Amino acid sequence: MFPLVLVALVVVAMALTAPERGATLTEYAAAWRHFAPWEMTVTNTGLANEPTAAAAARIDYGVQAVLDPLRDAIGVPVMTSSVYRSPAVNDSVGGHSDSEHINGNAADILAAGYSPSSLANAVMHHVGAKVGKVITYDDKGHVHVSWAASGPPERLHATAPGADGKRIYHRIQ
Image 1 (cartoon, rainbow, N blue to C red):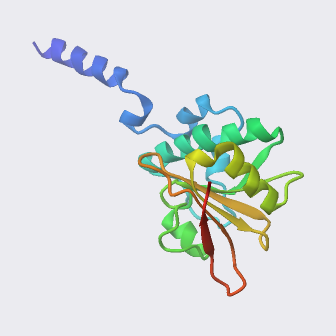
Image 2 (image 1 turned 135 degrees about the horizontal axis):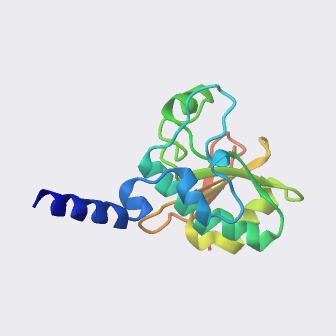
């Protein structure tokens, strides 16, 4: 009886898909066309920055639903300056305590030949249905893009900072 139960457990474990067993970014990256796992966790803080299994699954969704299709649509490499941030990394870089980066739901991106404003427009045009927020940071030279792996996306766009130093959000059409 014991060997049969052991075999059954091994078969079930082998049948689990990556998200069900908590895959690593390296395992997810096998399905990515234009990005490497290290691009999702790069930091110059010197702090540990490994995503949880849940954050890795959300990053995988973002790469497959937003970043890879965007790269295909615009025809030039999309570079990430920040995707996942551990709470310690987020604190170190002055991120908001509720930053979408902590949960693996956002990326700060740039692309050769695109200003932040033109890249934000490309995001909204090509993958807007999959994004939650698009924030144009002309002063920092990048675009913040967020996604939600479940539920409807917020579909908001903002330029930051606005004239008064605050973001003004507009619905993405």
